[in-house]
Image 1 (tube, rainbow, N blue to C red):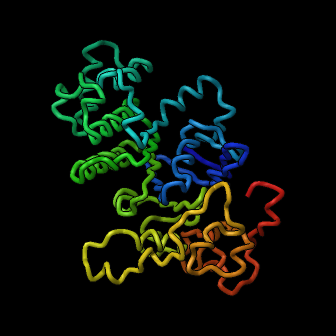
Image 2 (cartoon, one colour):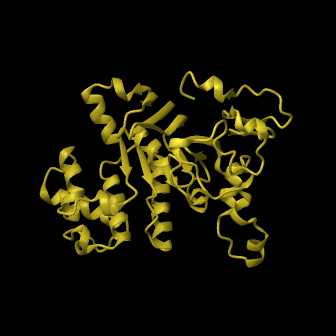
Image 3 (cartoon, rainbow, N blue to C red):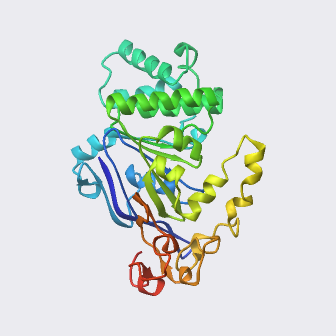
Length: 342
């Protein structure tokens, strides 16, 4: 359904170029789920905004059903807008404070002609509220955002994303403010949509436990400073991580067993906890200042995604992992990349 092909996004801030996303390629089909994981500032949300058509890529392309978004007609764009919905990360900012819950959910239904009467409109609004566990609906539909808790606001945001029965749902940390019981219930509801209705998902999270739960039958892509550093089936990425950054993320997951927690390396074995600035990225592999496996060549070579040895379905952007002998692996050096976008 949706495909990013070498998509990059560069922001120009105070005379400097900030490469928020660099040469990202990914795709999601009907009924598939792709999890984007990584630290804050890794480019997950910017990548999702490109897929949702909320921003145009600086270079590369974004295609929906094989059609480039930049070349769509007005009618095609309208169909795309209905088929691809976005659940924003912050419900405090994404909900209009002067609109009630009923108004927020009814506007897209009215705009696309999905409800012909007031009674039908109210029925659909009540169904949406019940779907996201805001029951009884009559207790919530006339409320305004300031009268709701953070978790309730986020459930309204999820309900709004479901109003048009989308074919692709992009969820940006959509369960971060929910109680654990509600979170699991909502994820199970989204999984049901995926399996029964064929809805595709791009699910953004920094919580690998959530990625494991929701995308176990799908794929996971790990991002660092705007690049995908590892991608593959979720069970393999979680159980057999190849990139040292992925391993560090897994080491950072809280462990309920104190004995197992003591066995984990402090900081996931990273050399530094500081994330480099996008305005002054390190040369070569941008992860090398923090990487416990870094070698001299890592300061010069920009790694590209290659199949990991012994893990055919996984791709990893790490020259130490893909070429432990130090032989040329096809990656470009920083000097070679000066002439064009990586």
